[in-house]
Image (cartoon, rainbow, N blue to C red; front, side, top):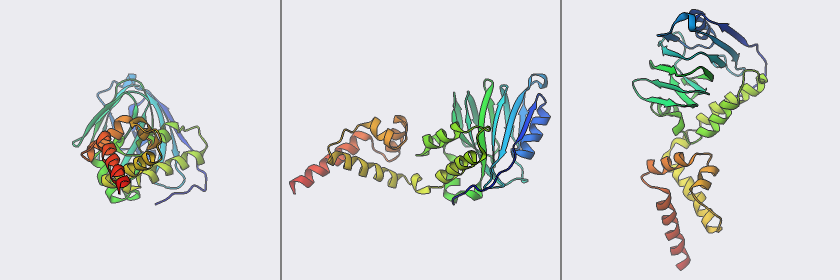
Length: 258
């Protein structure tokens, strides 16, 4: 499913030191049923801008700066089941009954159909938007519920887009980037491990036949992944970079002898 941008809408903003105002604002305008827990009311502060994305009534982009806080979701039937795709510029940790994660900064996905709790360990700066399940292929929904976003083969492309977004950007730029992320997440054949490792083997074989320089860092760069991520892809397929290289080398030697 592809999305296109063709009209403009207005932004919404709140600057408040009242938890109740913040909770009501993100619930009604960002469709996030979140509550702040275990926090002193008089210490609270948040500045948030919400940009309704113009290709879908169900998606809005939000950028916020807030004091450190602990948050908790409350599952509700009022909104569509959704994922929250977010990037935190500072330390954040969360957990639900499926997984837990802690990061200094980075992008992550939260299943809003499943209760979770999270904590910003320091004053935070976040960028986020929610994606209803029905905008993604069913297989992708199932994968995102049980796997961290960083395990997605296109994680660094998605993170780069999300990190580069700002509520002060032109509306069409925000909407195009949100649409790009939704479309990238919708490419379900990237999650087919055997197909993906096959693509890497084809790439390596071509490089070796042409006598081009190749190493793990180059593979990671050309597939828009970190070195650690590309190693994870190999391990998920019960192999590693050296084994694949040796396999291809033996195939080429055998071919030359024929």
